[in-house]
Length: 162
Image 1 (tube, rainbow, N blue to C red):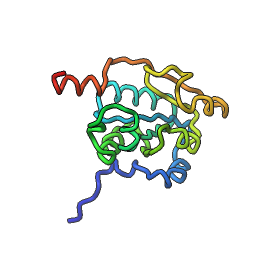
Image 2: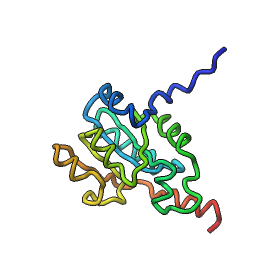
Image 3: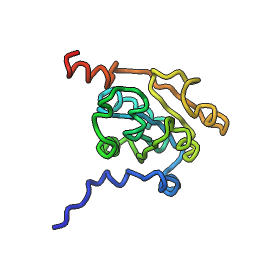
Image 4: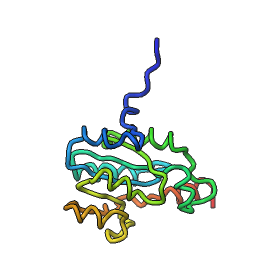
């Protein structure tokens, strides 16, 4: 008997195949991005709230190299990109997941042309990468308020006893 990949893995899209994937997604499209290194309740809540703002949610993850350039710590990410992609893809609220290696997701945002751009409440709308572009083509930008004060960095500090 052949072992098939889990049914959620079809949501993972290589960046070069993303344009084709987008054509099949219903609009309005909601876009968000992040490291999502150790998924926690804050992430899950924010992604569910983001999905509620449109008909489809696409999530773009920083590559491992991109995470390291963010200066989150020498040992970050804890989970490699392939694992982070699979965990995000497994969420019911996510319709597609991809990745970017640049320091910001701007190229991916411009490719997707979402109607709604979302980040967590720790971001001021004016500071969200892609905000000017999304509003210029008639979209909107939303910073979703935190409902659960969670942080991967703080979680790691707790685990390490620091």
